[in-house]
Amino acid sequence: MKQGIPKGTRDFGPVQVNRRNFIFNTLRQVFVKYGYQPIETPVMENLSTLTGKYGEEGDQLLFKILNSGDFLRKAKDMDDYKKLTFQIAEKGLRYDLTVPFARFVVMNQNDIAFPFKRYQIQPVWRADRPQRGRYREFYQCDVDVVGSESLINEVELTQIYDEGFTQLGIDVEIKINNRKILDGIAEAAGIPEKMMEMTIAIDKLDKIGMEGVRGEMERKGIDAEAVRKIETMLACKTLGDLKALFTDTTIGQKGIEELETVFSYLNKVTINNEVNFDITLARGLSYYTGTIYEVKAKGIEMGSIGGGGRYDDLTGMFGLKGVSGVGVSFGADRIYDVLTELDRFPDTSEESTRVLFVSFDEATYNYAFDCLQKVRKANINAELYPEPVKMKKQMKYANARQVPYVAVIGGNEMESNSVALKNMQTGEQDTVSIDKLIEQLKS
Image 1 (tube, rainbow, N blue to C red):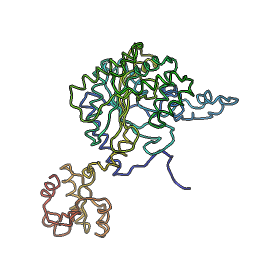
Image 2 (image 1 turned 90 degrees about the vertical axis):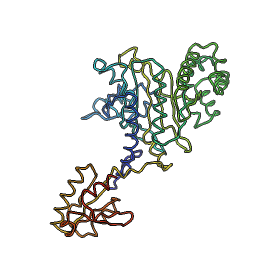
Image 3 (image 1 turned 45 degrees about the vertical axis):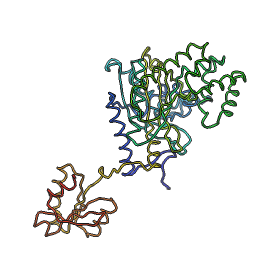
Image 4 (image 1 turned 60 degrees about the vertical axis):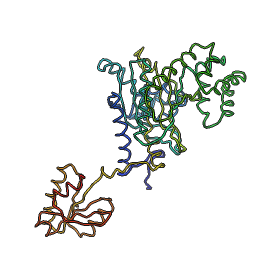
């Protein structure tokens, strides 16, 4: 049988894992710097927890897990696939980390201090069509704070985006909008009841262009005059331009006010990357209620590598009312692809074996074992080839593993309490003591 893995998933070898850990560790340090604490949630959630939180399109992308046992017994004579789903599948793989986090907050509300700032680095799954930069299994690196309505949280999350991508070596544009502004557009266009349909259409602007968005809105039942007004508002480049068109929408004015506050704070801090207001930013997830974010890498054709926003009502879906939250996510897998394409991964060889001990016979093998313990005690990554076979075989292994140094031990080295240390890149070889070897590798 031909072996393979599901489409949209990948295996990762040692080099890839070390590089991914560079991403995770870099972001973790930034998250902790800003006061965020780690949590983890199960890979699977009750389907009732996940459905209805991402909109109709999101619900269709949930991976469902079949119930154990005779799951078909309850499904007889049922032709409604939506009802059938809940009869045969009670659980699903998490679609993102935000909804499970909201569920976590509600279940642990008596044990955590509010405002609660958490970070979470775990995989998520989506039954999407695999393509470049889009996978069915991928990691998200999230930071969220719940229990505070202060816009300073939005400011800090923008700083976290800026600092995180600066540390990773990626130049980005951080786009910001506000869902209240999108509500204001719908209200000013006279179609407040069609706000979600309008938002879903605008969210596709990058892919299908304005003409495509226009057709999409018309197919959703938005009349031509409303579409014309929406286009006029979407052409606004600044908050000042938009104000003149929002004279009759209170919620739209509130959105402008919130963004002006965020930008006023950002003007007081050092930001390395571009942070821009983008009125066409219309993330389709239904739970955002305030500021929304999207991050794009510069100099490379790639979808968003980060996104998020404020969700005042999310915990209310689980019975905890009046708890506001805001958070952002780093798309680790797309970040990996960007760093690979730009060739900006740092050297991760320090994460691998620094020196391999090789020996000629049983006696020198035992001496090499003793040397190995001293080197490891000095916190240097080291290995001993597991048996004293032909030297050619041991050296071939060292080359295959790309080990930078090999400590060759023969009878002379054992008698003089030394090793023949070979630099595998230059080919140079010196006889040194174990203490000198440790000093050299540490330097």
